[in-house]
Image (spheres, rainbow, N blue to C red):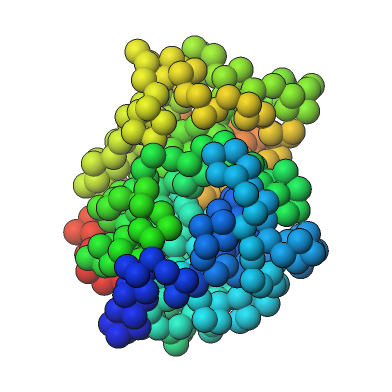
Length: 382
């Protein structure tokens, strides 16, 4: 695939800077994050299209004509189109916000490949570990005719939950979060497009940096698995973060964080620690990770998952921990605690997450030098 169509991108950038109704958004996914994002965008006055693979999940949005949001943003956000047809969903869109679990990225990239147009901005919210790189490889392998601009967020902009098929509660909109385009020299243009709706996005270096700042890898899998007994006996009827994280569990999370940071260093990337991220995202501070999490008001009221067979494990192990482990193996940065959590997930759920997860092979990085990997992230793109 060649370089992006500059005229198409300039048109979208001009529309974004006008901050008017010219900027059309498509949100991919009608779950916890997608409903919140579609509703919030509609509430802000943007034309919104919503895609979901399962059409039945869209019935409520169609019936009511949009999404009702409450919490930090309140009101009714109109949705012009709710569809399970990807061609229809992408037609005319300037910005495509992918708000699905990252386990769907590979199949979505294949489904979107023939439909994407020159100059469209596609943002993975978030990419988890290696999302934009995986998306790029699928588009290239599929021979996609369009030349979109790919970008990934370091995390999801909302702490949110769907409360019905057409309603979402936004607990918190993050103060700021990193975003990087692929290639990174296009990041200012991506931010210029997104700022009309989301000024919270800030330049995040490269997609290597946003991938390695995947804090969900630290907070979700081990916390869920180490609370397996409590989750299974109560159906998750306790506060996930504020009740589930004890000093001993926090020490495991700190070790996972240390290994993540070591792999990032081996990759030549400066990454925020989990404690630094909590402070920047939520103004949370503490003497250690346990105290910082307990001081995070945005986590109050968030319940634990109802079972351990949940995306905190089924997504974050293969799409977050497995690629960190794979990169660590290739780069000579051991990840024993991360590997232990991967194996514990395998044992408790009976699923080989290494077989289905992202690896240096599926990201198109196998055998490459650190210099070559950085060249893809900074210069090459699609």
